[in-house]
Amino acid sequence: MKRIALFASGSGSNAEKIATYLADNASVDISLILSNNPKAGVIERARRLHIPVLLFDRATFYDTNRITQLLINQKIDLLVLAGFMWLMPAELVRAFPNQIVNIHPALLPKFGGKGMYGHFVHEAVVAAQETESGITIHYVNEHYDEGLIIFQAHCPVLPTDTPDDVALKVQALEHTHYPRVIAEILAEATPKP
Image (cartoon, rainbow, N blue to C red; front, side):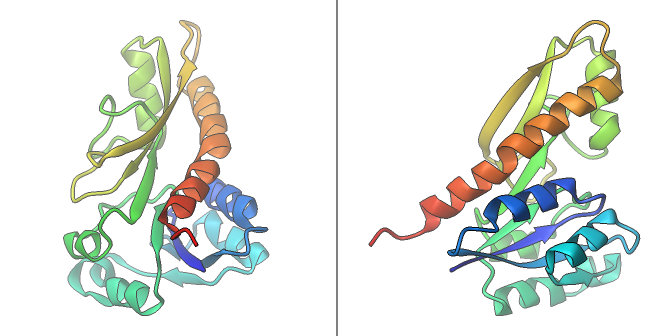
């Protein structure tokens, strides 16, 4: 069985879509949802889905190896960032090489890097008068949004679109593609009989 840990800081809509998509897959277990935000909506979603939640603070995440050790001890196969805003510590990245996946709400390498998340990305896309945006699913390395790209999906940006309009289009792509791509990554990582 493949064990997944989800990291989320916000409402948790992507985390819920992934959990729902994989719910009937007997070879996958979403073992844990981790969050740095005690007020995050993902906590209530996790309770409804009967997935354990671990809350942690900045000092625990960056100044100790407790999170890394917990994930190793729980034999987690894949870490999935679903709206998690902090840079992953180097030690955690080294402990899980090519086993940490993130989704970014733009077409990397454009509109990536520190501070480029959520609404800030969509505002930048509109301000730059881009004609398209989309999502990028990528492996995580020690730098924001620089890991190997796994998948991208595009959506048009019309001259009349507001950042909120772009956000809705991008979120639809996230909910459609992220769960499927996670399932494909897990299937590829499973040894064939």
